[in-house]
Length: 83
Image (cartoon, rainbow, N blue to C red):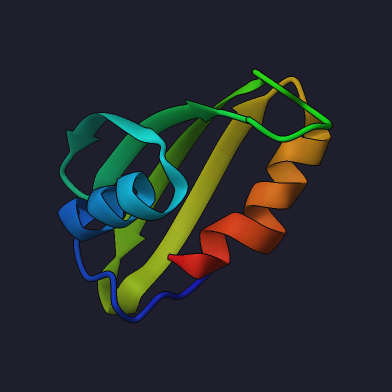
């Protein structure tokens, strides 16, 4: 995914926190580890861990872990594109 307004790990972390409500756990160079949980009706309380590498030009590379494929799909298709 490419988000031109995000040029650094800090900018990604701030956008993730303010727009999606996930917490940044750790930033290592250009990599951000964050976590959150669903508050939706289909997967209430399901946790997800996101590892994102922020590359030049706003290119974001994600690895996500959760027990809910529905939640990962929602993040990919609906929430993360809004950053």
